[in-house]
Image 1 (tube, helix red, strand yellow):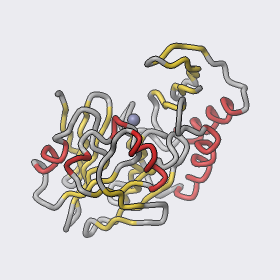
Image 2 (cartoon, helix red, strand yellow; image 1 turned 120 degrees about the vertical axis):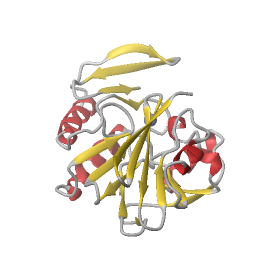
Image 3 (cartoon, protein in one colour; image 1 turned 90 degrees about the vertical axis):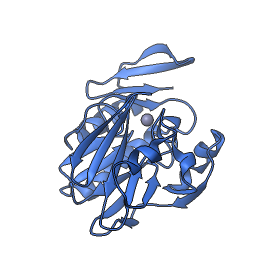
Image 4 (cartoon, rainbow, N blue to C red; image 1 turned 45 degrees about the horizontal axis):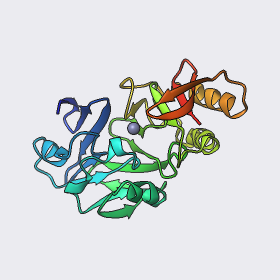
Length: 228
Ligand SMILES: [Zn+2]
């Protein structure tokens, strides 16, 4: 299993795992691992090699490429709206529910939860004031955004991107789970415009077979949306 650890700052790392990212943020008292990867059941061991602090886990959402190492944790932060998605794939453990307005204090580093439903019902992002970064999960990125199948909702995705304007000016970079790293916040209005076009039926889609599904692919330049 190939993975790569990349240091972002003295208290921040990203782990690249086969096209998906894990983040590790440390404070004075504890550390937070954000997502547990696609192919890394030993993700917890890997991050414990980077910090001696107690490590907690948060999942941006429960798609299987983000939860491979969850078993090492008895409990983890996750939106309660994600529970059906998580349990239907056999996910174990106790969900500590979080929602927008909640904070996680690592000691001298207070992270804020931001709701971003649409890609999944309980997709969340984490705002890190120390790095002035929005750790966005899957909804905000320049790669392929999965919007087909159960649990996806394009209209709610559009509303989430609009609501993000509340946080304007509080971060300089977006750190997504897939695609380029980092991404400029100017991607948000571009994704919003693209998503609205798709919802309004004004985008050109192409029918394709993808992972055993018949889907419609919209290459919108800014990102590729894979829809029903
Ligand atoms: Zn993903």
